[in-house]
Image 1 (tube, chains in turn cyan, orange):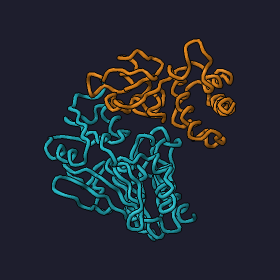
Image 2 (cartoon, chains in turn cyan, green):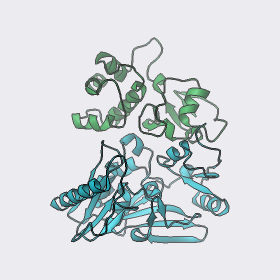
Image 3 (cartoon, chains in turn purple, cyan):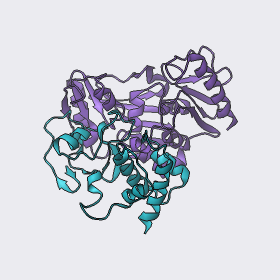
Length: 250
Length: 151
């Protein structure tokens, strides 16, 4: 057995899921599992409870709302990638999703899960930030909207409360021009650095503890990327400058 | 859950991964386990027809769903599946450890896109690692599999 023991819950409605999250101590939501299950396999995460939302019917919609695209909690990344309405309204989102891992992973992984997981090197948080989108969080206390700028609080940390379920993400229509560019060691790997341009707005990923919205006139001011086996801080800073140029040349 | 068309009882523990359930509880050892965190692609199976990593799913999550493993592609003693035949013809394997995962990924790729371009093939197999072949013969095998699948 790789994951440490946990109690497994499979609610069949959003209300039931929220009631579980409100009553359980140390619970994690399991959606696509493509980030959470590796953490469980390595025992880097050992939650006492898993609330698996995959049995909830009708939570996989992708639809047009308020001039943008709303993606529900269980919409797989591959479904967003194949969605005609997403391509028409927000091609930047579709291009961003295509850079997430590999198709086999995207068949299972969810767009909302990428946002809730908030990996600093992942694409979708930066896409949401650049576009100025939001997420909708539901709990037994009600529903609230969290703007992208207030969602990402640290490395894999968000402002979602422990009893909240990220039920929907909303991406405004892509302005023109737009671009998402990244550099990774191999196709589908986490990016060493990446940039998302939505009109005059610019968001960066892989170069700070969270995706960050920056001033396009002085994008690297105060930026202090971390180093690891794959790239030194200096190399990341070099990469991001090149990538920003490419994003604005697009 | 159904595995290769046969119903099986639910796994006993929630923390049992689908990959381990397939291998240890059902004895279907054609599905290989490499990295166990979704990088190598060896454990790829079809879930309701779409390729997924069986090491990144709990077995209980497959309840009520159809799983197909490499053993489900061809009948014992019968002709090989076109993708298997193509890997055989083009020497798309050496040690064979990664092969079940490649074959299942390619089955999924060709279902989604029966006539992939060279770039689409590269993208389609980019989630599977092979340490022997250098990929050239695997690429040829995918082109051949697309041809054979149309016949």
